[in-house]
Length: 215
Length: 215
DNA sequence: TCGGTAAGCTGACGGCATGACAGGACAAGT
DNA sequence: ACTTGTCCTGTCATGCCGTCAGCTTACCGA
Image (cartoon, rainbow over all chains, first blue to last red; front, side):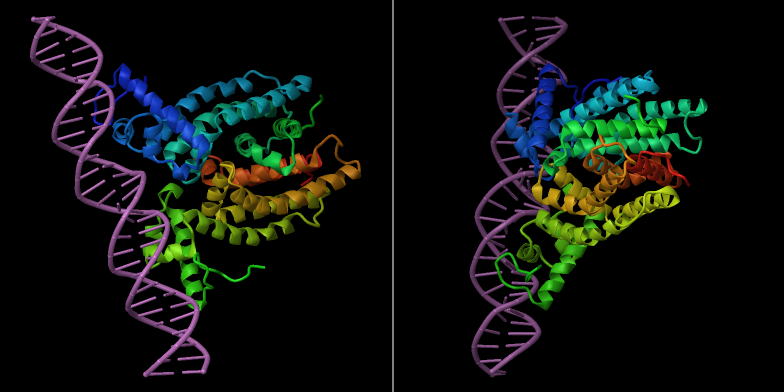
């Protein structure tokens, strides 16, 4: 599937090369966490990795290219978010639990990858299809499952037919993503995590089932 | 309030100077719409404005500084968003109308300023307090009004007491902002604007009142 | 053991953006 | 016309970008 890892000039990377490549990715990741995206320079990444800029360009076309690589990896990892929805019940107490766990899992994932995710978000918002695709890959895993949940509830007559399942799922997921990326912001503003989570869960439950949860 | 406009080296800007300054801001604004933030260079902005890089640095410390200026202006303009909530009713049919108009107004504002807003979002997410403050200024105008609405409904016993008004308002506003910045994304993905808006309005109504709207 | 071959790395270079300065152009009042 | 203060730009040192040729290192088969 992934095929062989190749350098920019076409050679196949061996053990040592892959290690260097990975080290560069790791350092870039770190830099993204500690300084503004706009100010991340190739030379800094290279220095941090104990190598030269030329080496960086051997493995990646530019900073953006390397970021895409990191993002791709994260997206694969993010596929596990599906498990937060798939096969879960939205009825009664277990419905509330599903909502709570979805929120919990989502926020955790976002916090763990916030630096790279905000760059992906920017790229997507700027219209770059590659970043957009990655963002989709992550969000779709949840969105699709949620869409199915809504449709199922609709077929049972438990949710109004005029609700667009896809739009509802998409909006909820966008909300989760947005709140996640501004978690620190909420705190500064005086809203505590402990308050935030139940409220998000409530909104998710309301959106999916149309009803207040029974706790 | 605004005081006098000053150059970086402390002189007061006259008529001509202010015009040049404004032209630079306009050109920067345009560039932000057409190319990735990371690739916006001072020299390009200057060229577009028919002047030299040195002139740019006379009025702004760097690109970021100029962006902050544009953002500040937009934030002032955005204060009018308060009108979308303040003094509106959340009861019965007019409640549904309030929700619809809030969504409509919010999406419009975001679409009109998407380029600058995504830079503000990035800056805020990266922890830059100046950007964060501007984001607050815009969102607070709506968030505070919504928080009041929820509290009012709570005092009338129409909404559960255990809902944190601030967290709910904040989450909803974050959702609106997020969906707005990825409007194009939704379309590409197959969700039409026409479906999106009612669903957002539904979520807002559910979140604020806890009930389904009567249309 | 010993080349041979391909992988891996870097010094060096032209090109371009940055940011500072000093000096010239310009407008307005006297 | 002269002065004054604003406004703009040519120029320069500095530093990053992105590429190339060429050197070093590791692996492998004879």
